[in-house]
Image (cartoon, rainbow, N blue to C red; front, top):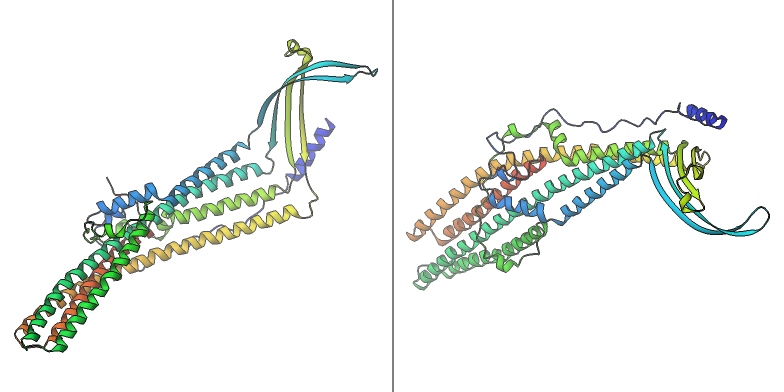
Length: 463
């Protein structure tokens, strides 16, 4: 009884020590509103449904979510973190075990005479560490936060990889249309070259006109391999993201060419405000959750500096014959409490606590940095969408104008009003403007995808 009172008195003295006060957690860095906003029109909040024809893009997303190896690894890490959280939570509860033994022993009695006898035993024991300083609870909390952050990391990976795959698919379609334009233009330019050759033979054009026409055909022909190779490299990246073996680019070139993605401008009413954005972004939430886990680990490190109090108990039966087991005369039992405190460790646990506090400060900085990056993504994607929409409108006007100019130049050349160089110049301008229009349209589609990705839009279309 005296030992028990001494133990409780020591615990009461140490209970006066307060848990460590950590620095403030991540600050909310969201501004009141975004300044760079695109035109407001009706649109969709889903990433693929932001396009007029979303079926093909949706298939890309489905393939990525189902087959991407990085996502499988993220899912496995989540299962691992959940199992560790279950384990940490179970450590807060008592442990109970049972055992049985059988032995044949030879030992001397009090007179020094040896004898051989049997010994049988059955016992049950229980142990529980009183969580006086909250160490076990904090450890369970940290493991729980790890599981939450693993789930959010998986969601962030899904969003990022699906967005990347959609962007690659959009780029691939754009390259396909640029390649188609180059091939169609080659047909027209070869016809023009044949016309010039015929006129040179008739004395109506010069050798200089023919050389210029041949140079134009050669320049356009040179662009075809570069475009084909760019499409191949993009397709290979896309296949890896979709969890597929890299495709045979030569065979893939014969696949039907999809239409250019027609984006619907996003409705500002579907976009969250800056604070809502930070609440929706899984990477921001994961970083904040990791800061919570770091705070719990700082609590664990602090609690490890103080004594631990454990309770143990056992009950069993011990007899020389199995028939005597479970009789009251053979029953044995015990209950005990123990206090352990390594009060002299030359600063090892204090150093562990300082390291845990530093880890918390690093996690807080990481959480705030995640907010800044998310706000940068959102602001930048809105600005890019606004500017590429204006650029697409202007480039479409320019492309139409160059077509009209080329047609007029051909008529004037055919009538002998202008020379071949004027026709050649307008043809070069038409090709450059048409190619630039495809690139701008591709960039506009990519900009819309970037908005949906930055604002953590859903990855699947509404059924």
